[in-house]
Image 1 (cartoon, helix red, strand yellow):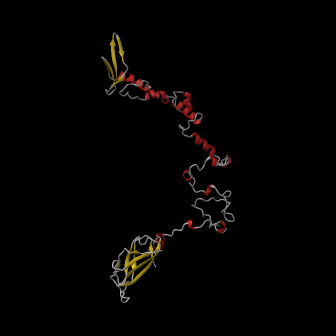
Image 2 (cartoon, rainbow, N blue to C red):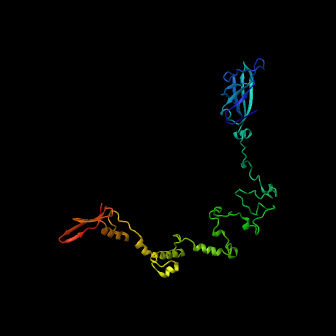
Image 3 (cartoon, rainbow, N blue to C red):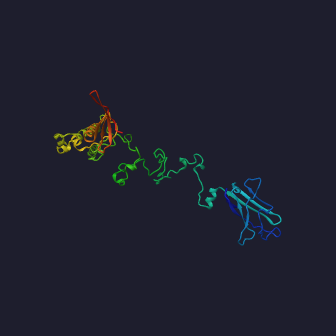
Length: 346
């Protein structure tokens, strides 16, 4: 019985085809089209189907043998399969039996696939505590490595078994037991260590190094004060306010001495603003109703420094590049001279 792969086109050997007259002379002229009967009978079938393939004689020295093409439709039914070819005037009847296997089974036998064996094939409760030998896991300390879904407690898995402890023994976890860099931020899951997960007395003066307090205090004083320290009563906010006062200090010998800087105009922030800062000219348009101090000063400065055309009936203010920035309408009626509100110089 030849094996076939389910729903797979293939070629099978057919023969020998021998003459009906003497029963042994090979026949090399057999065709599917010329045969009286050419049928395939599938597993549990009560009817047969006409073969649709072709017979091709082998070209090697095996007269009377052929290879037959089978289609996916002819191999679609699992189980036994019979092919019958008869031609009463030419050959003795030819009969071949096959068995159609699932693709996975066929490829597991003749290819590189593996049989699919699932836990679903086990009946419920087939594996119980009573069916496992009490010493089955002894010495198997790594049986659960890389596996999930286990709750390893003394209430069940290690009852009656030896070689296991429910937890670390005293003194088993030491600094020397960890590889360098084994515990770092990347190795810890997010929120792994929170206040709720640390025992109330886990961190005490007796359990930390002698200099840890000094290091913690030093880290606090070295903290960069940012907007996050902004609560109304936060020490960080008060420090930021103090920093702003120091940054804007004027010449103050007492404060400068406290800060360890020289008492000079170079440390006078208002003086630096007046002597070291520059202001940009106003752009073309209507001057602001509520300008900044810089813009208000620049309006007067540009009027005094740059080109200013006064005529009838307009006054024109220009920037240093000669572009008209703003204008005013002028009137002089009955000895009353008036300047209108400034508008854009466009």
